[in-house]
Image 1 (tube, rainbow, N blue to C red):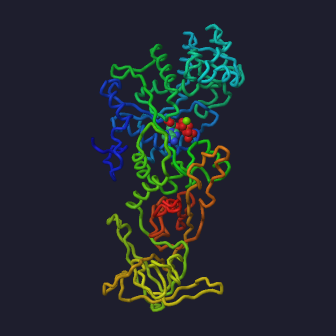
Image 2: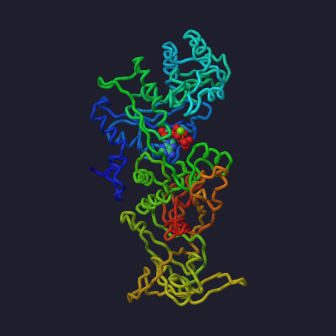
Image 3: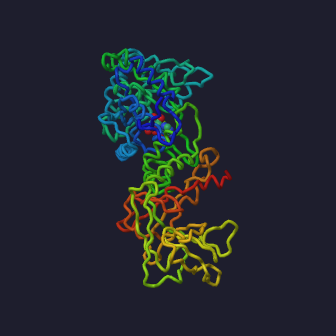
Length: 580
Ligand code: ATP
Ligand code: MG
């Protein structure tokens, strides 16, 4: 079996071979059996009630990936059947994010709301055939009547209403004669079924709320299970993939499809009647992250983050703003694979995929985040030495850049130690160190303030060591980065870290998850960068050498005043903290 990723490209890095996970096998079997009418059709059905997150990205990679794999079609469907929380803003963001991830639905864009007439018609048909009834039980009563998995439910006292009465009441529900919750339409299936979803599930409820897409035409709205199967069948979807929590809904999904079949409402493709099938896979759970849209909305509404696209959010727009690439996200989705077992994926894997990708594409620059001044005492005042450095050692075509070397430079405070600890090979009095791309330097003395804080480091450079290479080939152990003091540009740098300080913020049911927010998830500092950083474009991806990967913030950067978000550190600092 060839190794391909979700985009059908050669699998890079020998990521796990997911070429025959169970969903792929399932579809391949159907294709072979001829039940698809010659075309595999999948769908990604977000509810436009929030921005999509990395978990949705997994579902997107599967839904679109399977369509690509089988040369079929993946529809994008706004599953907009619950008007109270949906909006155009969300719908637009979902489209943008899916395109950014690298997938396209072509002509296959749908709104569930466009099927409201059809759903209503199916509901009336069910009433006519005695398979649905209007029920006056309140939601609490309905739950009580439904029973539990170990005890059968009780029939609603309204279960035996006549067809005429049901039709009349349902029409009056639609006409707006009743208040929210006063009545609902239920399927008449089996109150003794071991599957609670079969115990006369609600098909329609009353909601006097206008719909962001359908306007104020409706005050009754279909429930998910009823609507979703009708949406799939109406679009001719062959393979409907979703997360495991829907597994127990599958019999009801099939029940609705069967009823549509009886009503001759299933579509045909090349003479084959298309019966959509549902299968379920484990959702993505990520450590140090919350993934429910409701929780993410809470973070936004309580202003605990700056918005849905806060670079600490696991939303696709947040990840993008942070500096994640679509390639890194797809690689991650490829590596985690597809299974039916719930698990917690270490966020370090996502960060690993990101570093792996950024290493190839990020432009190298030098920047000093916590500066200390170094004075090169033997450097002539009027001299301009230049350092030459590659823009990307992984990509020759990225070219080189010139950095002016000056008599005064900045280095990281942490790269200097007056009294070095063992194995400290960076700047320390009496030892040579390489200033990357420029020269070899030796510290001679320091100037301190009254408190003992180092104000300036002084020393001399070896004029023969152009580019940092010793002419006599003597070995220099340490290489550090630097920026020229006079021509450095001051940069606003936002040091982002994980949003939560514990691996499972939702695990403690006694506490609100916001209590586990990492107080150090954002620190804003002023850094000094080499001059070439001044006109860094919005969204530009950089590696600050020896420091980490950074992305030019697309929202707050101004011309000639880029703001840098720390995308990810060069190494997993959390693993070290955990003592791994
Ligand atoms: P949330 O649970 O975050 O509120 P949702 O499931 O309500 O999300 P939908 O818009 O209904 O959001 O989801 C669209 C699709 O994405 C569904 O098919 C759902 O199964 C899938 N999905 C949602 N969350 C995840 C996840 N964490 N991992 C994989 N797929 C997911
Ligand atoms: Mg859901």
